[in-house]
Amino acid sequence: MNSYLKVSVFAITDYFAIIKLFVFTALDCTVMSGNLKQIDAGSGSVVGVNNLNEVFILIDNIFTKISGSLKHFSVGPAGQLGVNTANNIFKFQSGNFIQFPGLLKQVDAGGDQIIAGVNMNDDIFCLNMDANDKWPSSTTPWVQINGKLKYYSCGPYSCWGDVSNNVCSGSGVFVNIPGLLSMIEVATDGSVFGVNYQGNLYQRTGVTLSNPVGTDWISMVACPNGHKHVSFDLGVLWVVCLQCVLHAVGHLCLQQNNH
Image 1 (cartoon, one colour):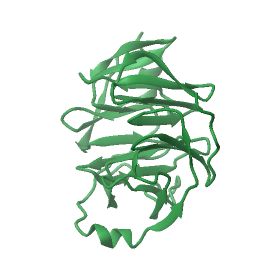
Image 2 (cartoon, one colour):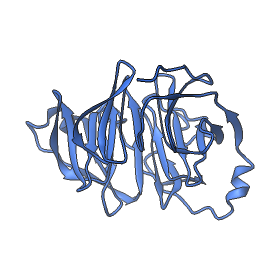
Image 3 (spheres, one colour):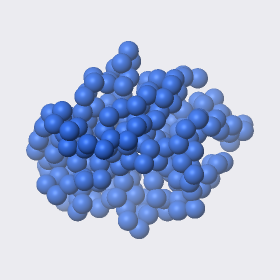
């Protein structure tokens, strides 16, 4: 399997000093039909859940409700996986959610066919691609990674997370990254986006295979009243606002018909 990245952070107390380093970018976005609290895009699919933990998949540009109840839903090279309010893990296969061994409060399917996530105690876990691909005919040996994280997301060559809502990243060892975020997502192309508790949206620049920690944070605005959740796939940035779902293609948003 590909090596996974361990992450951690240090606390930042001078938040406004960090802001001064950010580059501001405004996005011209258009509201899409939908009302979600969490969204994830990967491998050409877009999924999400609303405040009632109802589950949605984007089909023909419409967020279509499917059977199931999840508090977090993720899609990517590792498949379509979610967790419910009891922290049970489910994998979406052949049109149905099948319970997956283990307990996580947040799961991510964006790695190179590896599954990652954190449990209710903020412990970090990873499942290699062989176990994922062969399940349910094989066991699922979850590997615990040293450290504590509130949120964990993996891409093709880096994994990022947050501890008490502070940003972190690394490659094989714990690396501290300045920043304050409440959630962070790594796209299947390696792009890194996040949102802080003030509802501000950021992108990490300079993230490459040789430099997985990147260089700077860019401040972006897609939602006039603040941002709640973000994901990125195939050149499209998906953002959950306080009252709506937005998507952007580069710096241009496409108008979607209301249904």
